[in-house]
Image (cartoon, rainbow, N blue to C red; front, side):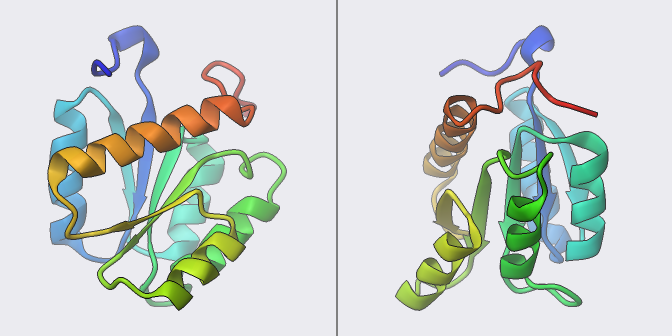
Length: 142
């Protein structure tokens, strides 16, 4: 899949409390042509999602104030945000965490240590899933 063109530029929101990880992901995604927003905690991430209606959300599980599961549940309960695909990011592989993430509404769970190209492919898959679930570009409501 080619990088987005200027007219089809997708927005990805990263919600993660680790600045190093956020900066690394922003650099990779911006080089791929994506518009990248970030938030360092759940409440700020929810506010960014409501304001910008991103095409994809990359969401860390372990954060202060509100964990990623709670953020995902709130996103999926919101009529305007529930169709945005959510990729849960985790540092550990745990079947119970995966089950909890899917119950919260996540589309995909990805290990943070996953190789760069594979992680990009997972994001593209989540973006494509968003198109299929009724969140095509241009159909966003403000």
